[in-house]
Length: 197
Image (tube, rainbow, N blue to C red; front, side, top):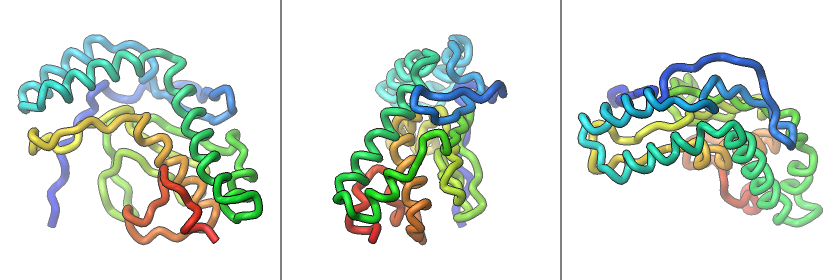
């Protein structure tokens, strides 16, 4: 039986606010993470140092937190991820099922919620940093998290950027009725051409 991972909301709790939209129309709830939080960043760095997280991970976190606090960051990342996933799916050929699915997806139909830390996903029963819901329209992604806090030598930073393309790709695959049996089966940010028929 695996133990619960060490989970820390590095940039503090959610501060719910109004829904916003990217230029392409993707709806998102930033939950206050698109605002500067210098005190939270300072506290998080101290917390990570106490746990012997390598300095390169801490430096990456500090730079990332600064970039993420720009209100233009979330919409830019989401629109770029949507464009990249669409390109991957269209590359399967104009008559392919993948291309047809990609052309059918209106960015206005996708809603993203920025989460403060890893969260429990009942099916498959794991703590996750990102999740595309089975409706193929709703995505939850952590603002940032450090993997392997209990094993500092293996620590790495999970970021909203890294997760965005993966979870938008999973939204596309859900809409294509692609069945996933494990995380390894997810299409994410990879080409769907050999999986979507």
